[in-house]
Image (cartoon, rainbow, N blue to C red; front, side, top):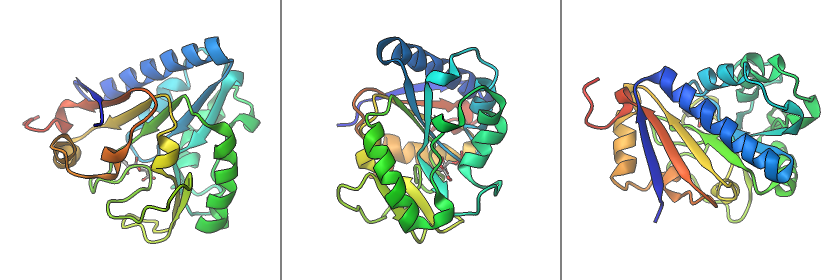
Length: 229
Ligand code: 6PG
């Protein structure tokens, strides 16, 4: 059974403030005990504000190792790439060594990129924290409902994603489950139906996740099932 900590906050801004606080707490703990903090980033719209807040905090960026939960197979520098968004609003604005930022080489195509990233992820496990989002259709990272489960692989090529671009690369549940903590960020009324489905036990990709430690969901009033906000 998935044990989930549900935390409802007022709005999108509060989601970001809470997420930023939780990430920093996890970072401080990881750095104090293991000397580094390995975080997996989500893409999409929701985490952008959190990343902007993180760009303003005081921490030892040399101790952070950044990975990505999924990437869209688009050329390097394409603004739709998840890594591009994170770089634009956060990573390029702080003193993090470039060698600490582990981008999925999705420009190589889904197969080659997944194979290369698999080797990297294997060495990085366990991650300290993974941030995830929840698509309106129930996908998380780029694991879409009904997608084939590819055995033990940690990183999977995605060839026919229903959300553009169709070619992607994603961490699998096997990799995400080797995280000490998962933090899911959900905001906006368009997420209400899918959040309700998850809470009611519908089998979504995210329902299968069982991280090593806590799985928390920070969502706002607009996304809250039953809300009229
Ligand atoms: C992607 C994401 C994806 C995202 C959800 C939610 O590349 O699309 O990594 O899993 O987290 O689609 O995205 P929004 O925050 O934009 O709704």
